[in-house]
Structure formats: structure tokens, C-alpha cells
Image 1: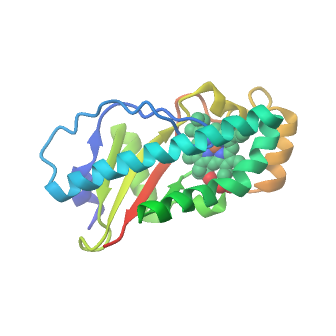
Image 2: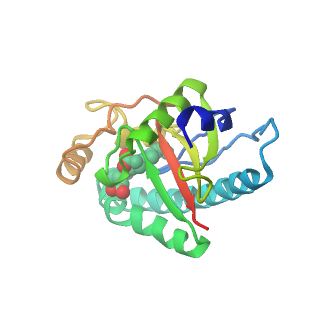
Length: 199
Ligand code: HEC
């Protein structure tokens, strides 16, 4: 499907706030205004439910890592556990869950060039989520916005020099030399959940 055709599927609604090395949580009750084809509606609902579950898991894990050892310690946690945790839920749900960004921290989370265009559309429309097919309706992919919606995000994604402590910065610099995910303001666009449904 070409970008301009699937853009009609974008659903501009409220803001998705996020928590922890992922997002939280207060998805606004989203007026999925129009008539989505029934099959897309099904993927939208599943995508919402799975991304909510996933963000809850990441949030509780990161919160306890911060409590146990502060943000610098929690970075090591995110580095080793964020992707395995998403993989476990993927397996359980029979989908593939990931997070992608135009300003990614982990190089594995980089958006493809088509997805960069999609991200621009999300930003322009302040859209919440959408379902697309990249391959002639063989497989569907759910995407939803992740924002730095909580002050806690700033400890690791905020301004160097004020929000991010020196020891946190050291941990980030050594694990992510190509990090693009610093110097965000509260409420910035941070990336997208991506949930792939294969037939
Ligand atoms: C303790 C530090 C820490 C906090 C707090 C934190 N993050 Fe992260 N975040 C990370 C690290 C480290 C990664 C890279 C994880 C990996 O290697 O898979 C990351 C990755 C991400 C990613 C995946 C895309 C990418 O850039 O690799 C998103 C999206 C994200 N964070 C959003 C948030 C949001 C939203 C918040 C606040 C609700 C938040 N993070 C709070 C450390 C943190």
C-alpha cells in the first residue's frame, strides 16, 4: 500500500502518554470516528490491548530498576531486558512487538524509510494510532504514538546537563554511542509501538 492511500487510515485523536523505557498508559478513549473496515478494526483493538499490556510490563520493570539502583542502573536493565521482554509477550500473543523511532537510542529500533514518512504523518496529524498493510493486505501492522508524557522519561531522555544526571549520561554514552534519544522535552513525540500481525 502506498503512503498516501494508507494515510487515510490515520486516526487523529488525543495524546498517548508514556511511561518508563516505554510508554504508559493513559490512552484517551479514542474516537475511532469513522467506519474502519471490520478487519482493520479488529487489528486496531488487538494492537491497543497488546501495546497497553506491553507498556505496563516495561513500566513496572523499569520503575523497580530505578528504585533499586537509580536511573544509571535502570539503563543497564533497559539495555538487556527491554527487547527480550517485548519478545516474550510477542510469543505469547502470536505477534511481533517492537518500538521504532526516528530518534532511536538502540540501533535495532531505527524506523525504515517508509516508517520515517509514516512518523512525519503521525507528527503532522497528532495521530494516535493506525493499522497498515505494507504488502497488499497479506499482513497488518499496528502503530501507535509514544510520547515522553511523564517527568520520569526526562531522567533518561531529557536535557543533558539538567534532566540527565552525569552518571546516567556515562551509562548512556557507553552503551549507546549513537544515541539520538536525548534532549527531548516533556510531551515530545518519542516513537511508535509497532505490532505486526502475520497471517
Ligand atoms: C532509566 C532510563 C530510562 C527512562 C526513565 C526512560 N527510558 Fe526510554 N529508553 C531507555 C533506554 C536505555 C532505551 C534503549 C532500550 C534498548 O536498548 O532496547 C530506551 C528506549 C526507549 C524507546 C525505544 C526506541 C529507542 O529509542 O530505542 C522508547 C520509545 C522510549 N525509550 C520511550 C520512553 C518514554 C516514553 C519514557 C518515559 C515514560 C522513557 N522512555 C523513560 C532508558 C530510559
